[in-house]
Length: 353
Ligand SMILES: Cc1cc2nc3c(=O)[nH]c(=O)nc-3n(C[C@H](O)[C@H](O)[C@H](O)COP(=O)(O)OP(=O)(O)OC[C@H]3O[C@@H](n4cnc5c(N)ncnc54)[C@H](O)[C@@H]3O)c2cc1C
Image 1 (cartoon, rainbow, N blue to C red):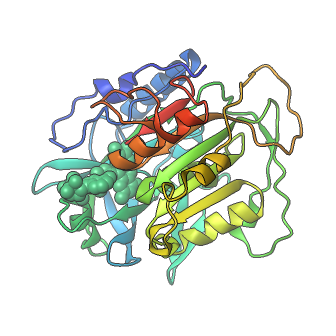
Image 2 (cartoon, rainbow, N blue to C red):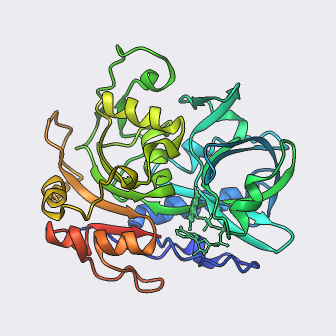
């Protein structure tokens, strides 16, 4: 069973801006230990005023802003003051997390999910290595809505423009995961060309396999998890729906590498190629594995079989309804849709909208 507690860090913080999306939209499932860990980390961030903080907006400058197509762009923000904290290992090890960007003219803030990447010049992207956190740079993949307030504004900002951000906020905390669980995983296949790198991760405990269902920019959750410096302690099966894979730009290469090296099994649905989760429901259902039970005490075992213990669903309201039933305002709502048909329940599905 996946225990659920509303994230007090996110719910309890003062929120001055009408951000058009609830601070509680992505409520959290937390185990008791994870609550303590997140709270402790939260206090740490509060106390370091020079560091990225949940309490105060900190100035960053735009260090890269690149359109991918008319509707999507990359944005890299660099702190004005070098950060001391490796946010990826200190805060983000067992969480999905985001930061808020403030739009000063209309006084709203929106959440964005950093990816462990940095721009190295000439439109080249690099995955952050294990002890490298790019001195606090944050890299985002963002959709620009033609009538949207903040993403449209961000897409037009020139390099060196100053923006203010705060965070990090935990959007989902993985229960039962020991942050030091990974014994070995060679991530060089993500950083260098060549197919020879082995990435057979060894863990102390049984792998925590998960299924992820993402649509559009919801894929940032899967990419954050799959690319982060502390590798996720399990395998990921990703069902991704989008217009066309090209809208990911160079991020598509990372997906392909992860797939080639067995870190991610990708099922892609591109509407421009007339593939859709809903077009052949029986076929889609046959791809979705039913849930397995996770025993956190069980020792590591080498196994070929993918045995998911959690399904995360991230996308628009309509997409979430199809896959896992509608959310009811801030509430998760009962699990319905495709996942219910494959025996998934309220205990092992989490919706992020
Ligand atoms: C925790 C969290 C993390 C997020 N991470 C990212 C991220 O990494 N990248 C990213 O691009 N976005 C992300 N988002 C969404 C982001 O916060 C904004 O909601 C989004 O950028 C739209 O804001 P806006 O001000 O541009 O548009 P708004 O002014 O809020 O909306 C304008 C129009 O766009 C439509 N719209 C807005 N959002 C959506 C949506 N998700 N699906 C369909 N239609 C929509 C609205 O219906 C409206 O018609 C995240 C949201 C949350 C809660």
